[in-house]
Image 1: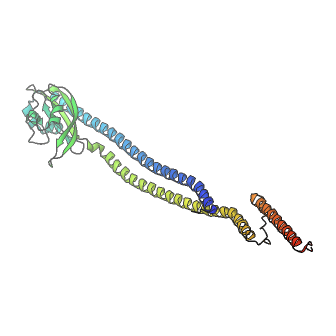
Image 2: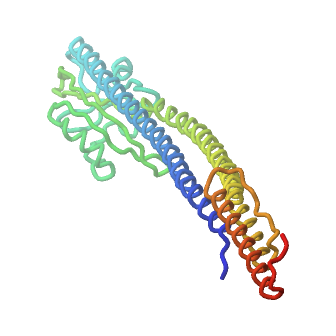
Image 3: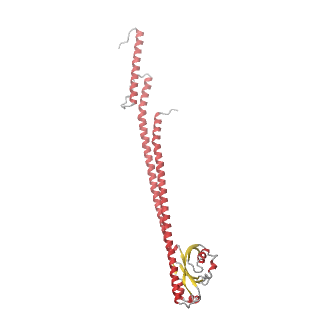
Length: 325
């Protein structure tokens, strides 16, 4: 199969030009993709750290507030009991002032409750059903709650998280701090004050921050995707334009080399057919093509001279006289 020089040169030039462009394009697109993925990863990492740090800080603040509430209420009850040394537990339960001191709000939905430290019987609670209940009965139903409460038996401070069963059978995390009342009732009972509420009441702002950052992340990711798509489109367009330029330049360059060769070939074919008056093309390029043209001109001149001499010798043999010049 004949494969012209023009096709060979065109293919070679295109390969030499297109291969680096293709490599450049692949690397550029990979870099764009890596940059895009890296930016999203950085955003996610920043969001995770920000939400985690804010949640931890707000939870710590909530724990501190719950603890301080328990200590404050315990101190108030201590003062009241010492000011009323003759009052028994039953009398204190009937006293609206003491009851108001014993059960106070904590956070949005929490409260304080007062328990006998020795028997762990709850004496004051926001729910009348819990008043005078032996909290041992909750050990099985609320093991987390009981784990914290049981550590306070005997008059010891305790604190910790526990899961609280909601009316819809879901569980939410609460934090409880138990402070001891340093006073004894007339019937020899010592109290502890349990301060408790949902910890997410304090960490709610971090959840809102997470939602806002998630929305911001979505916006940023969309912007990054849009910019990345725009860069990819421009990269593709650049590669196509450069490819077209390379193909056109390669074609023109290849033709500039093969056109003189074709002209010399055509002239050589005519001379081979006996057309010795054919003039070889003259090239002004100062290169091997010009040298080849000059050489072929010398060759044609030599052929003409040889043909003339042959004709003269033939005429002399035929007529016995040399031909007139």
